[in-house]
Image: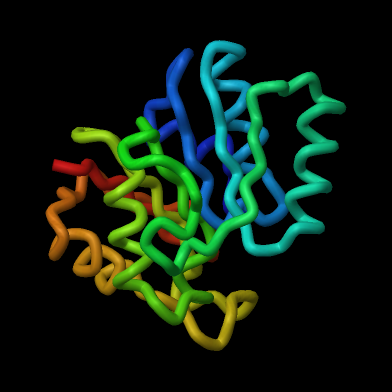
Length: 172
């Protein structure tokens, strides 16, 4: 099975009224599913550097009746680059983005800045064994080290499909 956003999000424990930030939202699968789970009283901030993807995502959300999505054109590799306020998020999602980043340390610090204390981070990225994945990948152990060194605690790791790994961290 390929990676399933609904199944992966179940590990994150989303609930009504929460605020979620989807970093590198891309096609928006995680954004749209999160919007359903947090309901009308919740909010999902979809952050991406590609304006065309954000516009498409805004339209898809509106077509599905999800009026709790806010698209944000921002740089996830710069502290403050998302333009969102510190401590805004109960949950942060980073799916298929680590392998693309040049400044992973700054990305991790931006995640930390966005999350409330005891907030959770979901990482989903390509496994090194995937023939469908990118040439450059970001191994799960490297992701674990990246976030643990800045004070996150690994809550769980899981198989996020045939070609992806999943990690859930808690900000302490």
